[in-house]
Amino acid sequence: MDTETKCPQCHSENIYADGNLWICPECSHEWSVHQVAAEDSKSPPQEEGIRDAHGNILQDGDTVTVIKDLKVKGSSSVVKGGTKVKNIRLVDGGDGHDIACKIDGFGSMNLKSEFVKKV
Image 1 (cartoon, helix red, strand yellow):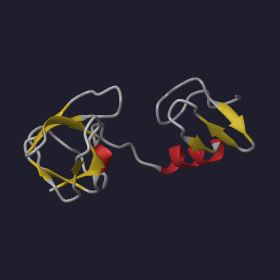
Image 2 (cartoon, rainbow, N blue to C red):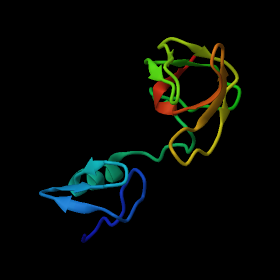
Image 3 (cartoon, helix red, strand yellow):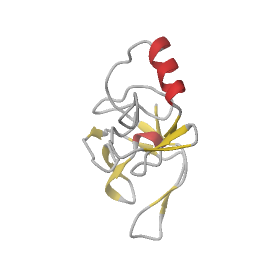
Image 4 (cartoon, one colour):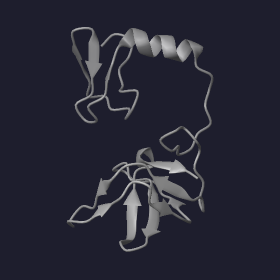
């Protein structure tokens, strides 16, 4: 591990090389050291914040739409793609669930921002 010692996605130090790729066993992210260096040199700094599946920045109180069917853990029901969720709250979920909301017919639950788009 010469230059890059952390995973660019989850910042874990437990990474290993496999051929010409680096792999993070904690989040399963794979990357090339050369690719990360090239992206750092030409990408402009982005605003911090939670982004939806299309890269839009989310804020408390926004309305979002679920983009795919999501299984509800501990239940046999499914949140259908296209379901509109109003008045979201952004939370710091350690497990990737960074949106707290109430969905009609399901109640309170947490969602991952990668499965929603801003309306």
